[in-house]
Length: 113
Image (tube, rainbow, N blue to C red; front, side, top):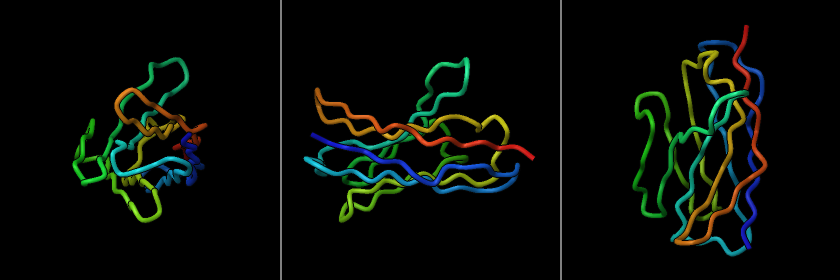
């Protein structure tokens, strides 16, 4: 079993920045791909970024999103600067290994003045 807990969301003004954290516990290991999706009200869930235990990164936007991973603490981070109102969403952390997928409960990000 793998448990994921996100943190770092909140209310941010446009142009601000955030760093989201996702801490994994349980049977987590470096074979898992960890990353983030987001879902805004009335919209489909959208892939944001992912990172392997070896540091290989995939991203929907390499300019806007920066993802990193600290394997020693089984934690993945998502950093975004110059936030826009369109970044408002529930951000969901996931961990995936072959047939196994695990999801966190999500953390809300609201970008508004």
